[in-house]
Length: 424
Ligand code: FAD
Image 1 (cartoon, rainbow, N blue to C red):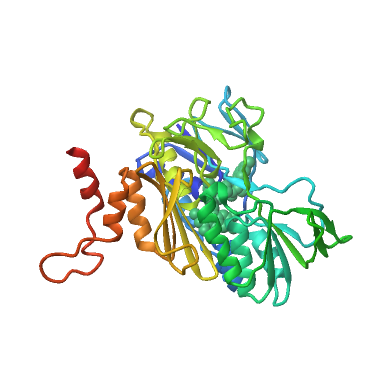
Image 2: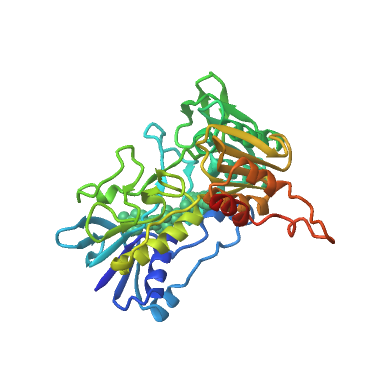
């Protein structure tokens, strides 16, 4: 019995670790196109850009090989899949599988009209980050295309280095699809408060420069000089190697279609991480997530289900991600797709806030700026289908009647509050 995992970043690593934890005694082969085993990708746009300190790896090849008996093949690219013969084709030959986990993640979307000029970069890998860091110096004029999370982090880190970033986004309010208009506007104001100009509702019409980028002309006619352009307009699931094998892919390029157990349309083939699109029972919607926490948990879940086919469980999660801009911690839980947003603590222009996303009376999402503890409690509330009343009680607890209790101690138990009502 052989488990093959394609993709040796976080989801792939957690899949092989989970398979061994489940007691799987068969052969495990881990195939990854990068030369490195899973590393702290989120640090690439944050601490690494600012300090240049090497990013953390989450496991060593030696431990995987010696302790977990995993056949680790790095620098090897999967080029195709034959589900009838149950083989993965790779750049170094054919690998047979009995069960397969696909964890090939995502790659930056680079629009085809962007010319191949020196100084125009995207950011996904350690090598991309090293190339970017090489060009970032005090005074470097950086244009960031896309005011999403990665683009915004690059702008923030550039500023910390003394470079001069400007962020350009075609939407009038950034991040609307991810977090909605009100929260998107509140986050965008962080750029302005930290001195980074935004050019919104416009796009690049022309790149200026012969071999090396020297600037751009916007659709508004404005010309912005640049030493460096960072393209941060999103990522596409890495499914190019699967187009011939008959696996069902989302028609809007949103990844590999999976069921609740993370099974793909092909027998004995699972998917996890940024590449997987699955029905998430916690939010009652199908989705593909691009975040660290999901890649870890979903990778482990897919690895477990792949080696315990008689005891599979559905994968469900309340999404969580964080982002750091200008030394401030942004966190988001649940979904931005509600019908109402309310700042339940602080306000959109304050240094700390919590914004709740409601679907009727039910909490379905929350964004927080510099409120790390409360947001994790809200995450639990979303899973428990908490209401406006639950959120009020959580954020403004009734003081204890006897003696002194610290604020955290006097917080009502989330599960207690909600499940009690549910039972009544
Ligand atoms: P990936 O990390 O994309 O790994 C996929 C792996 O598969 C890669 O190593 C790739 O080379 C390999 N692969 C692809 N195709 C093939 C093939 N055909 N054959 C073999 N191997 C292949 N998330 C957060 O929650 N918070 C953050 O602050 C945050 N910051 C980020 C900052 C940056 C700069 C980036 C790029 C991402 C950030 N993320 C963040 C997102 C997070 O890093 C991803 O969600 C996570 O890495 C997904 O893990 P994954 O294993 O699914 O895919």
